[in-house]
Image (cartoon, rainbow, N blue to C red; front, side, top):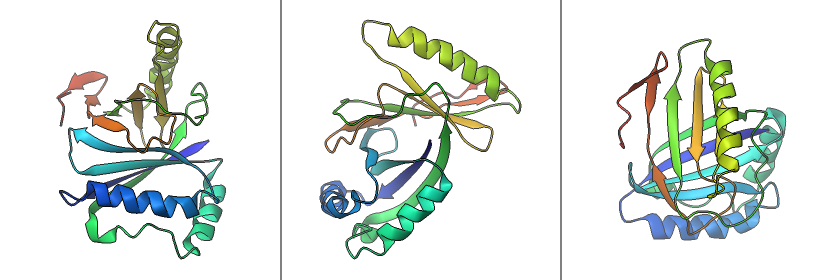
Length: 187
Protein backbone atom coordinates (compact mmCIF):
# COMPACT_ATOMS: atom_id res chain seq x y z
CA UNK A 1 0.00 0.00 0.00
CA UNK A 2 1.21 3.51 -0.79
CA UNK A 3 -0.16 6.79 0.51
CA UNK A 4 -0.20 10.18 -1.14
CA UNK A 5 -0.13 12.93 1.47
CA UNK A 6 -1.13 16.30 0.01
CA UNK A 7 -0.62 19.44 2.12
CA UNK A 8 -2.07 22.74 0.95
CA UNK A 9 -1.23 26.03 2.61
CA UNK A 10 -4.32 28.16 2.11
CA UNK A 11 -5.18 31.84 2.43
CA UNK A 12 -5.97 33.00 5.97
CA UNK A 13 -9.71 33.02 6.64
CA UNK A 14 -10.53 30.63 3.78
CA UNK A 15 -10.72 27.34 5.70
CA UNK A 16 -14.52 27.11 5.92
CA UNK A 17 -14.97 27.79 2.20
CA UNK A 18 -12.12 25.43 1.21
CA UNK A 19 -13.57 22.59 3.32
CA UNK A 20 -17.06 23.24 1.92
CA UNK A 21 -15.87 23.14 -1.70
CA UNK A 22 -13.62 20.15 -1.07
CA UNK A 23 -16.50 18.24 0.53
CA UNK A 24 -18.83 19.03 -2.37
CA UNK A 25 -16.25 17.88 -4.94
CA UNK A 26 -15.39 14.78 -2.92
CA UNK A 27 -18.96 13.53 -3.39
CA UNK A 28 -18.02 13.06 -7.07
CA UNK A 29 -14.39 11.96 -6.49
CA UNK A 30 -15.08 9.12 -4.04
CA UNK A 31 -16.40 6.85 -6.81
CA UNK A 32 -12.82 6.59 -8.12
CA UNK A 33 -11.14 5.91 -4.75
CA UNK A 34 -11.92 6.77 -1.14
CA UNK A 35 -10.18 9.47 0.84
CA UNK A 36 -8.08 7.95 3.64
CA UNK A 37 -7.86 11.06 5.83
CA UNK A 38 -8.56 14.79 5.81
CA UNK A 39 -7.48 17.36 8.41
CA UNK A 40 -6.86 21.04 8.94
CA UNK A 41 -4.30 22.57 11.26
CA UNK A 42 -5.12 24.59 14.35
CA UNK A 43 -1.68 24.53 16.00
CA UNK A 44 1.71 24.64 14.32
CA UNK A 45 1.79 25.76 10.68
CA UNK A 46 -1.65 27.36 10.42
CA UNK A 47 -3.89 27.63 7.38
CA UNK A 48 -3.16 24.12 6.10
CA UNK A 49 -5.36 21.30 4.95
CA UNK A 50 -3.91 17.82 4.64
CA UNK A 51 -5.56 15.02 2.71
CA UNK A 52 -4.32 11.46 2.36
CA UNK A 53 -5.18 9.01 -0.42
CA UNK A 54 -4.34 5.29 -0.31
CA UNK A 55 -3.49 3.24 -3.39
CA UNK A 56 -2.24 -0.30 -3.99
CA UNK A 57 0.68 0.99 -6.09
CA UNK A 58 1.79 3.83 -8.39
CA UNK A 59 -0.01 2.29 -11.39
CA UNK A 60 -3.34 2.38 -9.55
CA UNK A 61 -2.65 5.96 -8.45
CA UNK A 62 -1.98 7.04 -12.05
CA UNK A 63 -5.12 5.29 -13.31
CA UNK A 64 -7.39 6.72 -10.61
CA UNK A 65 -6.02 10.23 -10.95
CA UNK A 66 -6.45 10.12 -14.76
CA UNK A 67 -10.07 8.98 -14.40
CA UNK A 68 -10.85 11.59 -11.73
CA UNK A 69 -9.27 14.36 -13.81
CA UNK A 70 -11.86 13.71 -16.55
CA UNK A 71 -14.65 14.48 -14.08
CA UNK A 72 -15.82 18.10 -14.37
CA UNK A 73 -16.38 18.21 -10.60
CA UNK A 74 -12.80 17.29 -9.63
CA UNK A 75 -10.44 18.72 -8.50
CA UNK A 76 -12.29 20.97 -6.05
CA UNK A 77 -12.52 24.60 -7.10
CA UNK A 78 -10.10 25.88 -4.43
CA UNK A 79 -7.11 27.05 -6.49
CA UNK A 80 -7.80 30.72 -5.66
CA UNK A 81 -7.12 29.92 -1.99
CA UNK A 82 -3.98 27.77 -2.37
CA UNK A 83 -0.75 29.57 -1.56
CA UNK A 84 1.57 26.57 -1.55
CA UNK A 85 1.16 22.84 -1.98
CA UNK A 86 3.24 19.76 -1.30
CA UNK A 87 2.61 16.14 -2.29
CA UNK A 88 4.48 13.18 -0.84
CA UNK A 89 4.14 9.51 -1.71
CA UNK A 90 5.13 7.14 1.03
CA UNK A 91 5.18 3.35 1.47
CA UNK A 92 3.61 1.81 4.54
CA UNK A 93 5.81 -0.33 6.75
CA UNK A 94 4.59 -3.93 6.76
CA UNK A 95 3.33 -3.67 10.35
CA UNK A 96 1.05 -0.67 9.73
CA UNK A 97 -2.59 -1.76 9.57
CA UNK A 98 -4.64 -0.80 6.52
CA UNK A 99 -6.80 2.24 7.33
CA UNK A 100 -10.47 1.58 7.94
CA UNK A 101 -13.35 4.07 7.80
CA UNK A 102 -14.48 5.65 11.03
CA UNK A 103 -14.39 8.81 13.09
CA UNK A 104 -11.18 9.29 15.03
CA UNK A 105 -9.60 12.15 16.84
CA UNK A 106 -10.09 14.90 17.70
CA UNK A 107 -6.34 15.68 17.68
CA UNK A 108 -3.56 14.22 15.53
CA UNK A 109 0.15 14.85 15.27
CA UNK A 110 2.46 14.39 12.30
CA UNK A 111 6.21 14.28 12.75
CA UNK A 112 8.92 14.23 10.11
CA UNK A 113 12.25 12.61 10.84
CA UNK A 114 15.48 12.81 8.87
CA UNK A 115 17.52 9.67 9.44
CA UNK A 116 21.14 8.86 8.87
CA UNK A 117 21.53 6.71 5.75
CA UNK A 118 21.15 2.99 6.41
CA UNK A 119 19.30 3.40 9.73
CA UNK A 120 15.74 3.01 8.41
CA UNK A 121 15.53 -0.78 9.05
CA UNK A 122 16.57 -0.39 12.69
CA UNK A 123 14.23 2.57 13.13
CA UNK A 124 11.36 0.55 11.64
CA UNK A 125 12.03 -2.31 14.06
CA UNK A 126 11.98 0.13 16.97
CA UNK A 127 8.68 1.62 15.84
CA UNK A 128 7.23 -1.85 15.28
CA UNK A 129 8.02 -2.78 18.89
CA UNK A 130 6.65 0.57 20.06
CA UNK A 131 3.41 0.05 18.11
CA UNK A 132 2.85 -3.33 19.78
CA UNK A 133 3.42 -1.77 23.19
CA UNK A 134 1.25 1.26 22.48
CA UNK A 135 -1.61 -0.77 21.04
CA UNK A 136 -1.88 -2.76 24.23
CA UNK A 137 -2.03 0.36 26.41
CA UNK A 138 -5.20 1.61 28.06
CA UNK A 139 -5.53 4.49 25.64
CA UNK A 140 -5.34 2.11 22.67
CA UNK A 141 -3.17 4.59 20.83
CA UNK A 142 -0.78 3.45 18.15
CA UNK A 143 1.78 4.86 15.83
CA UNK A 144 1.49 4.48 12.08
CA UNK A 145 4.83 4.87 10.39
CA UNK A 146 5.55 5.18 6.71
CA UNK A 147 8.81 5.06 4.88
CA UNK A 148 9.42 6.89 1.65
CA UNK A 149 11.90 6.38 -1.13
CA UNK A 150 14.28 8.87 0.46
CA UNK A 151 15.82 8.16 3.86
CA UNK A 152 13.00 9.92 5.65
CA UNK A 153 10.14 8.45 7.61
CA UNK A 154 6.92 10.09 8.63
CA UNK A 155 5.20 8.96 11.80
CA UNK A 156 1.88 9.90 13.30
CA UNK A 157 0.80 9.53 16.86
CA UNK A 158 -2.82 8.64 17.32
CA UNK A 159 -5.02 7.22 14.60
CA UNK A 160 -4.64 8.31 10.99
CA UNK A 161 -7.43 6.10 9.73
CA UNK A 162 -10.49 8.10 8.89
CA UNK A 163 -12.25 10.60 6.71
CA UNK A 164 -12.98 13.13 9.43
CA UNK A 165 -14.42 16.30 7.98
CA UNK A 166 -14.48 18.18 11.26
CA UNK A 167 -11.26 16.84 12.74
CA UNK A 168 -8.84 19.20 14.38
CA UNK A 169 -5.26 18.52 13.49
CA UNK A 170 -2.12 19.38 15.40
CA UNK A 171 1.17 19.37 13.52
CA UNK A 172 4.57 19.05 15.12
CA UNK A 173 7.64 18.64 13.00
CA UNK A 174 10.71 17.12 14.54
CA UNK A 175 14.02 16.47 12.89
CA UNK A 176 16.66 13.93 13.80
CA UNK A 177 20.17 13.94 12.46
CA UNK A 178 22.34 10.86 12.86
CA UNK A 179 19.85 9.40 15.30
CA UNK A 180 20.10 12.31 17.76
CA UNK A 181 17.27 14.83 18.35
CA UNK A 182 17.83 18.25 16.83
CA UNK A 183 15.38 21.14 17.31
CA UNK A 184 12.31 19.05 18.03
CA UNK A 185 10.10 22.07 18.63
CA UNK A 186 6.57 22.76 17.52
CA UNK A 187 6.71 24.77 14.34
